[in-house]
Length: 489
Ligand code: BGP
Image 1 (cartoon, rainbow, N blue to C red):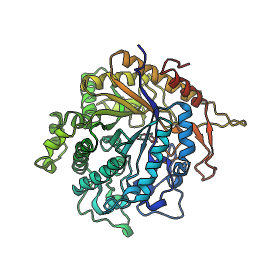
Image 2 (cartoon, rainbow, N blue to C red; image 1 turned 180 degrees about the vertical axis):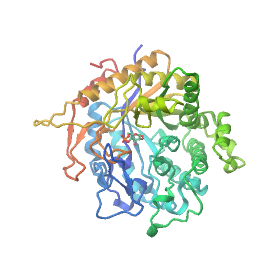
Image 3 (cartoon, helix red, strand yellow; image 1 turned 120 degrees about the horizontal axis):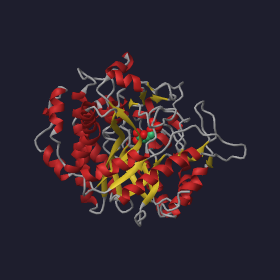
Image 4 (cartoon, rainbow, N blue to C red; image 1 turned 30 degrees about the horizontal axis):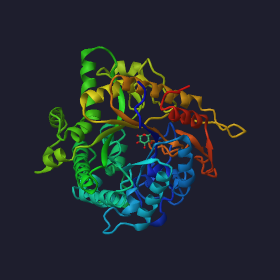
């Protein structure tokens, strides 16, 4: 048995990481526009007031805004069946709460969609990929404020009505669980639009009142995103009953560091809170029982759950479940053992795996495990991997070739693992590689961490003419798609 007929092969990007043109055609500022670039060892920094003299890689990104025709043509050459991209909320409603949408923004995405359709590429649109309008952050404290639910629903349904005959696949919030797993708190800002009060400068005060960055704040805002997402599912199906509307979860595989039953139990708890909770709400349509004890232990008062919310969650369950997967790490209750094992990005090192320069451990077997786990948990929900890729430094040879065999190996191993999961009986409908074209990294804000199968000549010192080059992985992925996953050589 091979990959199913009609399997959705393709690639994924996010508007804020590729478009650039950050103030063009009426677009308003959004969260990533306020973040300076970092490096593998120096995190991205947040400036609550944009500094005109500083270099923000995402302001130009790879200038996809003006290169989309050329780029989609390259995607078509690879044989893509689907292209996942996000609409930047601030291009449609520059302040997030404007009365009328910005026609130039709507028209721009319509052109991008038409360009995909011209080549028979199915658009898969993420409605919110860390692109909350800045005005929503400063005026409302992001999704902490219940009024933002309706603002998001208005934005989402405006897009859905406009593109209803052209776009079938939609995702509401990218990596909705990100506030639950980012220890540095960036997930609060990216995912929920809430600024750390410590980051507030005197000249940019926000009426935060007593609001703090804590679980109470995060869980309330997250609840509002659940309601917003469910409402968009309900309204979306009225706009076009054939829409497939999905959720999106960030999955990092986790294992107990040792067979100590306490490590195993801790791993289960972490898995539930960080990774299962959001999917359980969005797929089963209700809060899982385990969350109530955790909320109590973490001083979360659920009084933000209002009458009628349960019904909305039940009626607004998603049609398919999508997720990102890059790496895995370990969990232990023993701080000494953790120290001895060493740490990697967002967790404890697994001695059986190797890691990239950014500390992301490569674990294809973990992907097969996860696919089986998700299918067991949600047996009636189709699954799709909408992000998987390798961030690496690439070298351009004198003749313009780029030999990224490490990236080919990464994707080969993961596609093999996916194939095994399909043989295990997992109903997977598609796979979009992350990046597919180089772009600005979400966590570090740099160009140097490249994911693409298409190279973009643009660098962290602001140099580069944005020209595109095909990497070896470009030709490899084309073969994979042509053979529907048979030819992985
Ligand atoms: C996911 C995000 C993407 C993307 C990717 C890679 O969390 O949804 O936007 O960027 O991770 O992460 P990074 O760019 O930090 O390497």
